[in-house]
Image (tube, rainbow, N blue to C red; front, side, top):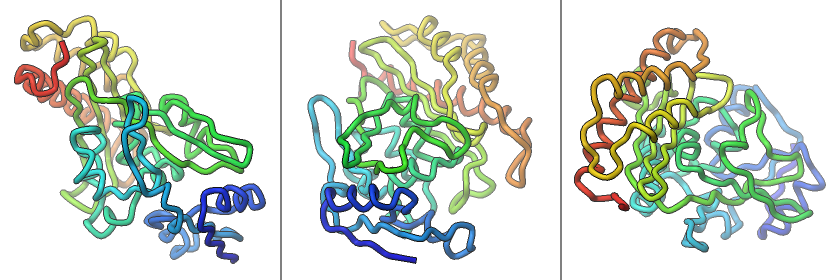
Length: 289
């Protein structure tokens, strides 16, 4: 196995162009597990830890540009106001040691449907920045996931950043696991309310071959929600929203949980997320009338 350690993004892109099958590594929280268990042994590893651009974040033309190599710990500490849904999801990732190393870019590159950061990226209409020697392009998170562990990322491209829209209302993330910590998600759900445009975003994780949305639930809640006064939705509205979210799920039975349990938990999490969002919206902390 060859180990390449470029010091600039340009060198990294040239390395990826020369070795399309080369595997990028930064935090290594997924890659090293596969290596240790001999699940995947690439001929080339491309170390990205020396590239400053990937570990930086900041405002960029109305969005927050999050470098693909910014670790979860910094997201929790620094971006809890700029990206509250993503920060909440980051808090649920594994242990402090892994949160110090793991990155959203790595989560996207692995594209596991159980990845904790996928649901809030979907719910908030985040955009993924991809780069190669041919240039840069962007792909909406909602178009990024193609099939099981297959994404819009091309063989010669690297994930360089995630563009996070300004929050315009409450954002939630909930996760169910087989224990309280250090656990792969049995099911995960994210909800985002956009009070300015009066739209709803959802993100479902670990309940299908890819992370997904529930467009039917989004359209239903956008029409039913009292955007002016944030009055408490009726029990029928809350239950219907949960049912529509669950209906979008396409789970399987596995060692972590049954398909029926995952559907049930998705409905419960959707109802809880809506309740929490209404409470937050009524306080006016993130309301944009």
